[in-house]
Image (tube, rainbow, N blue to C red; front, side, top):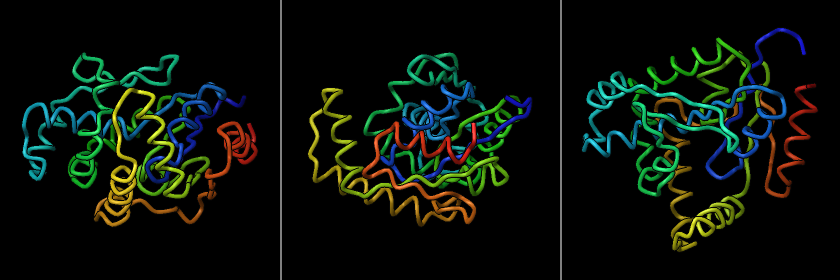
Length: 222
């Protein structure tokens, strides 16, 4: 493989399969996996633990500046270490999921996290996934993809994931939460979710993970 740094960027809505695909793709290519969403979740978790007002952008930015985040590659994909503590499971709770939009829309916080993300990408080849990695974080990425799936398919995937974790879930409520999250992602003023003009559109609704990865690798050429 040529001795250059690749940035493979994947955007898309919640439940489209970005994380699963990005982890596998990174492992196959020997790249680092950059889960940008995990970084926002970690700051959300810390703000909730410290009872910070999630509407107070200045307080959230101050919290982010005194936070040490590290993403470590593990067999399962990535371990999120915040201030020396493994919070990989804690950041995946429904409460954190439903409050992450406060952090995602805070411009000051996004500036801090985007700088962290760019520093990581400057050191080695990565596969990054999120909401604005193709449009804001890495506008000059080597390859850009927008990964989508129907709301129904995304609801079913999330429902199955939560049930497998032993959580009691109302699928109708879950669908509404996903639709609400989409609305917030698409309409926020800072870093809204949208397809970059030069991003390849991938509809994963009827594709297996293997088929999605095969499609991406054809475009990447590695």
